[in-house]
Length: 56
Image 1 (cartoon, one colour):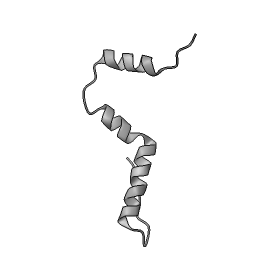
Image 2 (tube, rainbow, N blue to C red):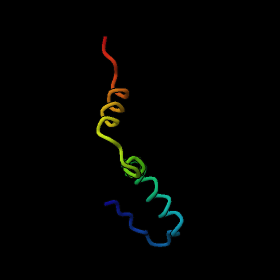
Image 3 (cartoon, one colour):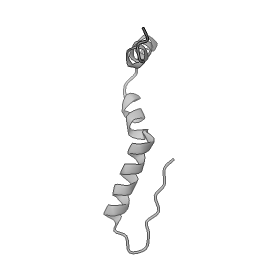
Image 4 (cartoon, rainbow, N blue to C red):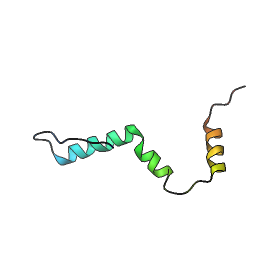
């Protein structure tokens, strides 16, 4: 769980921007979007195989 504390004399908008940046760096949004819909196990395997580097 990500937390961002608001510093003294800091606007809420600035703290919200820091929070969004932190969430993006941790990859939480990407994971959330991936889990939004059910993905069959065969689709997961196929996606992982496509993204892995192909060795010769």
